Amino acid sequence: MIIFIDENDENKRIDSYLAEITPNLSRSKIQNFIKSGAVKINDTPKKPSYILKENDKIEFEIPEQEDLTIPPQNIPLDIVYEDENMLVVNKPSGMLTHPTTIERENTLVNALLYKFGGNLSDINGEFRRGILHRLDRNTSGLLMIAKNNEAHEFLSHQIKAHSLTKKYHAIVKGVIKEDEFEINLPIGRNPSQPHKMAVREDGKESLTRVKVLERFKEHTYIELTLITGRTHQIRVHMSHLKHPVYNDTLYGAGQGKVKTEEQVLQSYYLSFTKPFGNEIISLEIEPDEKINKVLRYLRG
Image (tube, rainbow, N blue to C red; front, side, top):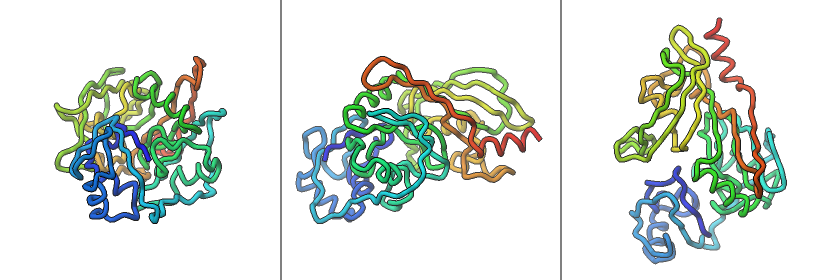
């Protein structure tokens, strides 16, 4: 199996990462597996403590006796666009993009396997069949899916080159005075809380454009355009500016008066080049019920 590391998994130890994607192997077995030289990173064996970097190539074979089957599940898919090489789905809030060691069912990948079977790219392994990029569990909206490895590489190049356009809607705490502005602050993993990200001087360049859509007494409805695509980028940037996303308890917003499944954030617009040519596909969806629910309260 060959896996290329994206920015969502960089800065993890190689043994921790393999534990995520091989849930039937214990941490000690994985460490012995790595020490034996059976795992190569960029064609070279590494120690279990090796810290992954973006674009690292991991090469290894799962022991045959280990069952890593992800069960296909008949979960409805909201397909916004589809052609012979790819599709774009509207992922609902509350759904994981792909399985983890703890949750192997009811994810987007389970639903994709039921509908498309083996007709999905496998560049990122069985747990991430077809997955090009991710949305947090409680962030809804548009996600690209690759049906084959050639389309996966074509679309991945656009993601890495930041040549596609991704826009989000969010409601944040506080009143933002500027109509439009940019946030250019580097983001890296939080050293004391590794499940979180943070603005740090040694982080990766991260650029977000913000446009105010509507102001309320204590909140603001905004559109955000991601120029880069770091993990939790919008949530980290807005929290750093003291305008955390509504109900984003991980990044300091607290629970608002309107109860929702965590952050009120939606990927509502996506524009990209269709594989394998020059046609631009632009897709837009309406605000989801979570955003509408909070807007109705604020406008009322």
